Image 1 (cartoon, rainbow, N blue to C red):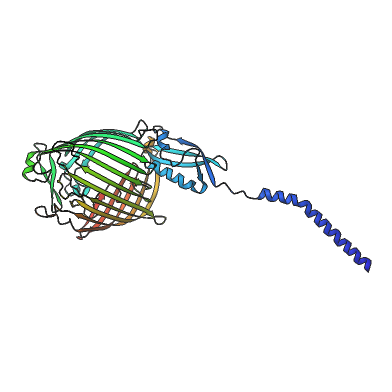
Image 2: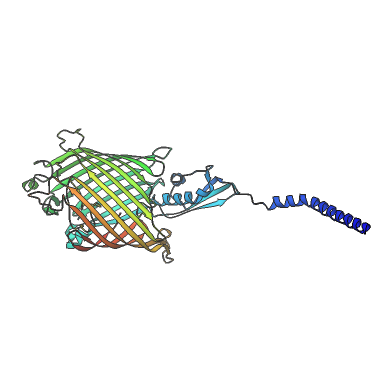
Length: 487
């Protein structure tokens, strides 16, 4: 019995020894296996190698590289790659040099990759007819549809001149307003590509001009036998760009304007007193910070702009113009969900000059400063505030359409999108000159409200068409057409 027990103990010891020996032999292999199957995390920092550019037959590479927030040999965080690529694409599209842009990464190894930028250039030489109407907006003209208030002509524009984003243009216009002029701009003067300049000269003359606003309607004086106003404007400007999104703009302007003396028989406010000629220097400064995804039709991002304009520098003999204007513009755009977007804007104009000649005095209802629902009205004044909000739904997401029947590459492919939305605007004009007798403009010095709904069509070559139905504070309704973004 005892011998059997001893034999069992010896057997157990042998088994333990064999198991221990087997395990010991397997340790190196297990270690090697664990090392070979262990996942090595990718590096957090990535190095940019080459930046390859294709498709730019006209545009110089340096013009494209100027819009990138990175350059060759830069290091960036791996999680920032997609954001950097998206930003580069948006910046290039906002130059208005290209119809389409793609920015992709080409991995070289675990720590390096190249950048491939592919662009489709726009058509840069335009010899096009000039056809338009003189009224404050298309909707005002559509009320009468008068061809006497139309103008026509032609312009020859060379965009992206010499492949450096320069612009050179000539134009001749006839009809309601005769205008002739030349303009040239170069965005990059120095090696760092942050300074630019330009100039323009324009001569114009009219048989009819607006001379006052009565009951918030612009009143015109016309004489088809002679020109009532002749005007020469010469401009010289300088730009300084900080990085991608911030820029300074400084413009000097010489204005010489003459009116027929018969105009002074019906108004003394067009120039100053009974003057028939006015000439002055003007200085305009502007700072702009723009982080929008699109300068034409933004959906995300923000921008703000400050502007100061001084009319009359006292450098010329008998320079009677003395007006200073300050402007502040704020805009913000957000993506709420997959197809919903919100936007809001705020713009103010302040002038310390209570008295301003009608020739330069403008508030709401002119150009793009208006409360929607009040398109038919001109609300003049020396100061104003304007706020807008909007909510839109992406009915048709941006799509690319190919037209094989058109063989010309720059026009055979285009993009388009469709948005529907609602909006609400509010404004106020502070006026101490034209709201009282004999002008009687009751909408000034009162709060203005408008709201409505509309559809926006957006396509290539910076084309935006808006169809809106709105109602104002006076419960007036209307259908309006515009050719720019609402906010």
